[in-house]
Length: 165
Image (cartoon, rainbow, N blue to C red; front, side, top):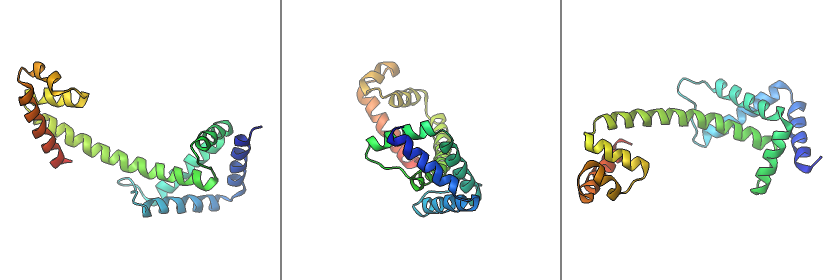
């Protein structure tokens, strides 16, 4: 047995030694810490939802000792040490980040759809080219205008997006 598997077993044993109430309190404290650090609960979620999700994530990670050992080894190669507290903290942050990111992503997606719908046909093609990382010179022949005209339209599109987002 290597040192990473031994550490994984040690972490799992520490989790298993705690009572259900101690585990929930540990998860609760990590979720509250994440909130104090600026993360948010998902719209409509309660604190208990985030605590339970964190608990489930941790329990799931601790079920597969081999996978946990590989994760500990990967993190060690990056200069990090793992502990039960670190695993619970990352699970809490993932629970909160996932909620905030999903909500924000949905808002951005809706804003971009509305923005795109308001563009004329040439600007839709230009915007599509911008998203694909095309240059002004690559976009110009597609919309049959000069690359300078494409540049001016791109500047306006970026300015409008900056105002929206």
